[in-house]
Structure formats: structure tokens, C-alpha cells
Length: 633
Image (tube, rainbow, N blue to C red; front, side, top):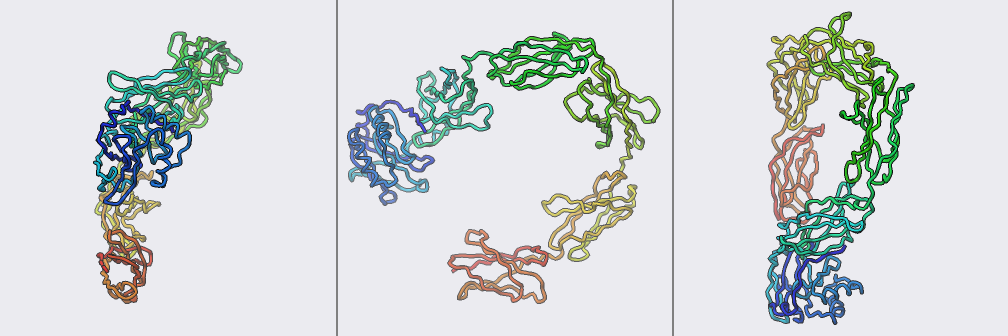
């Protein structure tokens, strides 16, 4: 991965005049140390809490660089083997006093302000006390004041341009920012995420408001369009916030696409229109849209979305004896090209209209909803009619429902209709020649009376360990005695217990209510169409068999821990014992018969453990846990 350094030139005389110092900074890889001071100082020994950590060699010149780096391998075993290519880059940075070269993300040769090896420590030692000695004399270890400020630096987009098929993006960076490296990211219009460009090129320009970074993307296909983002990193690898995006392309030198031979021909016998065209320079085309209008300068509506590879389209026949105008819109990679010619077509056959064959109606809440299937494309739309007496002339209630590309259509009659009556509906088709079809088959729906009273006085009582009896008052209801019962526990959704409604009754027995659980119930009335009214207030039935908790006694014996609990003769329960560590985390759980009322627990090496118990019945349900009992060695 190429790294670009944004440091400024520093004279060697200024470096030698600086005091010897070991600088500490924190990055994603850990704690960084680098020496700042004269280039020929010697060796810096680094200690953590009085323990030697490493030796940094500072007297590296261009001449003996390779030798000193080889020596560093013995002092820092993880130091990478330096290849000839690496040496060329390092020597170049030393000679110009300009670059910082990164080696395998672990150690650096740097001339940020002086020459030296950077050592990386683990982040767990951030708060440790460090001391450094240069040839036996202690030198200061200070924290880099710029470390951490990278999160406050915001990179601003400054524009883009295409350059010999490549793309250059420009970014504004504050003059005093700690950014030393930059990374360029790219995303095409089809991609979901940004990816890094490993071979991007960078250069620095001076600007009135700060520095400006110019990034070059040269690994591009022709005629491409991308979004770019830039991120900066400080000397320690900490990233800045990701910049806002720049959208750029390299389309400037390509030829705009053209639509040629655009025409529309009527097939009167088959009631179709064949539209055809040819594209020139079509490699930039993303998509095509065919539009249609009843007049040359009127409003156009979309007929179809087409691909760049389409050259024909078959449309349904236009209105009889009327011209229909077609227009082709080209969506280029760089935007809409809306300058194609317009062509008319005349259809001289008056199309026949047929009613929908499949019509149905159902109640959607309180309103009739009429549905039907499409019968083809040679129509303008549909109209819905209604009557409450078969034989009377139906009235239109919908207006024109325009034909679209749907396979199924639906219309809801939201008129205020009288309850307790039946209503009858039919659908007629209107052709493109404004011809209405015959009525479709009539469909009927009955609007029931909606009043459903709420059951009153719900009470519950537990009959045995797994049964709960429910009853409620029906003296003020007129629902015909039809009800549904719902149940839930804490934090659980309501569950309907009566899939088949309860008829002419005011009680129900829930035979699956465990005695270890609190249950909550409500009852709701139903009408003749199984529609629910307002439910009664929920009523809670408390658990009857839950044990509040089981006390334990723990003591150390040879071979482990003896755990005992109260005797429970004749019980068919199991006891579940849970073990927690000194941090309160449950680390083990075991089951035992309640008799005999003790067990030996092997715990191995430990400092402090805690135990608690709960009962478990034959259905696998557990009661409440007892208090924790702690035992220490």
C-alpha cells in the first residue's frame, strides 16, 4: 500500500540543534516511540517500569544505514529483513529529509524531525512509566502533543477533473493538521461500499486556506463514473474522519450518443404499434425511456423502461383515427439527453372492449373492496358500478381507473353505506377508442351490524397445578354468546387459546397453565363474521406452586465442597444448583435429586465461589432462585 507523507522540509542544522528527546504517541498498532535530536547521537535505551524494553539506534547515516538495520535485528527480533528495494526508498528519504517510510506496519525509519528507529509497544502499557537513556544519560520521554488531534481534522472536497482518461480529485486540509499520510477510496455507481485505491498518486499544493492534496486515480476503465472519499492518518496511524464524497468521471473526451432512424408504424390488423430506432455511440448509454402523447406539444407519459441494447418496442394500439406521438429519452452516464426526434402514428381500427372475467368483493374493515384481473393492454381503464337491488340500473361510483402495468386491480367503496344490507358490484372496461364494455358478472357483499359489546366481570381461579378456570358476565351483551379467549405471560405476545369460538357460554378452562407461571387473560366478543369487538380488561392469575427459593448450606471438606439443603420427603422435584465465580458470573449448573439432601461439589483451585438453588418439576419448569451462598478458601 503506497503511503504519501505530507511533512515539510526541515534543515539538518535545525535537527542537530534540537535537544535529545524520546517522543511517545499512541496509534492503532500500539505505543510508538521515536527519537528526536542530533543524527549522530548514539543509542537510546528504553525502560518500562525499570525493565529494559529495547535499544533505538540513532546514529544512522546514509552510508552505514544497511549495517545498522542488520544490527537492529538482534535487538528487535521482529524487525523485518530489509530488501534492496526497501533500502533504496529509505536512502532516498534520508537524502532528501522529506519522507517517512513504513516497513511492515511494525518499525519505521523516520525523518519527521530527526533520524531514528520507531519501536511499537502493546497498548496495554499506555499508563506505564517509561524512561530513556542516551549513552547512560537520562533524556526526556514526552507525549506527542499532536497525538489524538487527528479526530478533529476534517478533509474538505475541492473539486475534480479528468486528465488523459484519469481522474484527479482535490481536497482541502488545514495547514496545522497532524496528517502525514492519505488514503483514497472509490465506489462505482453499482457498488455498495467504498474500496481503497492502493496505487493512487498524490501531490501537495499550497492554498490560501491551507494545504491542498491532489489525488490521481489512474487505474480506471474508459467511460467510467465514480464517487471518491479521502481519509488522513497521523504519524502513528490514527485516521481522520472520512471526508465527504466527490463525484467524478472521465467522460469528457467521449462522443455523445445519438438516436437515428426513430420511427413508429401502425399494425392496424393486430391493433399494435411497432416503434424502432438505432443508436450511434451507444457505449455511454445507461437506459432508454419511451414516452407517448396524444399531441405533439402535449404532456408525454412513460410507456416503457428500456435497456441500451433494445432497438424496438411493440405498443398497444392508439385511439382510433387519432395521431399518437412517441419520444425516446436517452439516459447517458452523464445525464439526460432529451433531444431525440418525435414521430406520430395513426391507428384506424376501432378496438373492441371486453369486461373483466374474474371479479370478486370482500370487506376490508368496514368497506367493500372490489378486485379484478387485467384483460390486456388495449384499454384506457376500468369503471366500477354499484346497486343495492338486482335489476335496477347500477350507478358508476369510481370514475376512470386508468390502466397500468398491474396484473390485478382493486377499488374500495368508501361511500357511507347502510349496515345490514347487501350491495352488488360490476366492472366495465373502457377501450382506447372510448368504448365501454358490457357489465361483468355482479358480485355481492353483505354489510353486517358492527355493534359488539364487551364482556364484563372476568374472574379467574386456579383449579389445580395445570388448570385455570375463567368466567365472565354476559347479562349486558347481545353478541349471541360468541367469544374468544387470549392469554400471555410477562413480556410475551398475546396468544389466542380458542381457535374455534366459544358459543353460548360464559366460562372456559385453560388446561395448560403451569403453576410456576403468572398468567394474564382477556375475553373478547365476536360477531357473525368472526370479527372481534373491544376486549375486556385483562385479569391476572398468579402462580400457585412456585417456590420462593431454596436455602443452601456450604462447607469445605476434603475433596471439595459439601452442599446441603432442607429435606423434602416424597417430592418428585429436582434441585438445580448454579455456581458463580468471584465476579458474579454463572460458570456452572448441575441437577440433583432432592433426596438425599446433599452432594459433594468438586471445584478445583478457587479463591471465592457462590452457589444458589432452584427447584425443577417433571415438566422441566423451574421455580425462583434462592439466595447466593458464598464460600472462600
